[in-house]
Image (cartoon, rainbow, N blue to C red):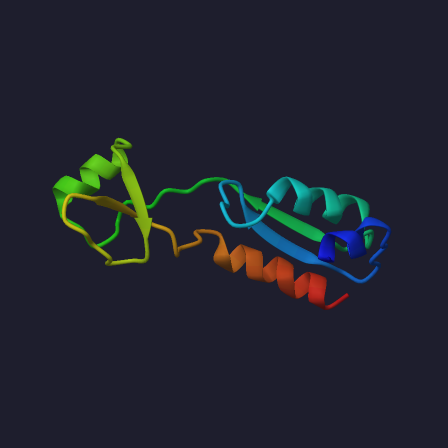
Length: 109
């Protein structure tokens, strides 16, 4: 339903959109297309974050080393552990402060 509403829409208010390159929940290609074609305000900001793997997740040094070399990584919130699995952090954005400055700028339009 939302997609059909957006097909012929033109949204002129400022929009701030932030998404991850490796997002498995949203259709990032579709979101980018709608941002470009439907959301036309010149103050718009699209933050496209690359994949950032944070291996400092409260696990053992041995597991952190395995994570850093890319061995079969599971993603979790900070501190979550399961026996036999190496976890990388998925709840940390190293560019959060910069992103919030851009959000403030867009919202002031």
